[in-house]
Image (cartoon, rainbow, N blue to C red; front, side, top):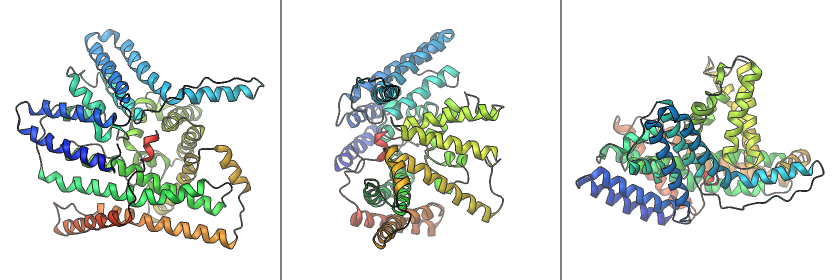
Length: 471
């Protein structure tokens, strides 16, 4: 069920209405959580009901492991291993088995051995990468003694399956989200306008920006031999598309959760204004990058590793695996490795960590350079065929005929045109809040109205899935 579909709008309207009607009932919190649990499983199993079996099994296993760690603290390491093995095992079977089986057969072929891989050809359960990391945050924090194990299975099940952020995040930490589920929620009119801003802004970025730009991006990357100019425009378009698409999902998720009384973590902070690779990862997909930092990078030693080679190794493991998390394909792994090398190079030049440019001109230069590095990374990320990319870069004509130049210029103009609402939205977000300033309230309200008009005029049928559903 996609946020932009009429089926979801009808579903959410029903959940929202019943949810707040239950707030007047005795044991309102428990009834509301029960409704969220039923609604979340209906949402997740809308197309493939058997998906619910997987998320239910992860829920029960991690709930039991948490209780066992609390009851048998001396054996908590063993219970953590059970949780890791079960969750990563499910992820490995459904997402990575066919990829590694085929890769092993291809590697054997290089030595003259012909192997026929046994492929399972399983349907990838949507959102499995997200809820696996979310539920693992619980068992790892209980293991570390940073969180008390929960005894209420229903509250824990809602934490794992909460429908607004279930499919594509943000990845919530148990320490942050479980307390919200365990307290009484009251309707707040003050939350209405900020929530509507998030929801309408998300629809604008998805339906007007991402879906329209994505049409031209797909056409360029389906060409056999695009010119370098077209490839550059396609990569720029993809940078716009993936940011608009993914941030749209999390904005809508935050908005609809806010209307239910929950505060989800902000997932993006102007990532294309980053001045360094480290700064980029503090701004892009924050819930995921902070998960990698806290549960993988720091435990491996992080920046405390004394030798440059050891530090590079930590980065290659952390960001290489983060690339693999995005998809079972070598281009994602290469994308992660590429970013690891970028972070390492900047650190060696003393431009990493919390480094900031000292002047506005140097900041502008730093942002521009980092944006070019980011685009090169997106080129790796977007292509599904490394051989195609290599061939395109080797054989694309450097010079352009009049037709090729016109096609590149026309496509660039369309990308910039469709991106303009997102640029305006970024400026509006920097205005004073509607509650703090009457001028801010007027401008934000005007933008909201204009966004609704733009969605009405320029949106497609809303059937396009969000990009991160594939991961």
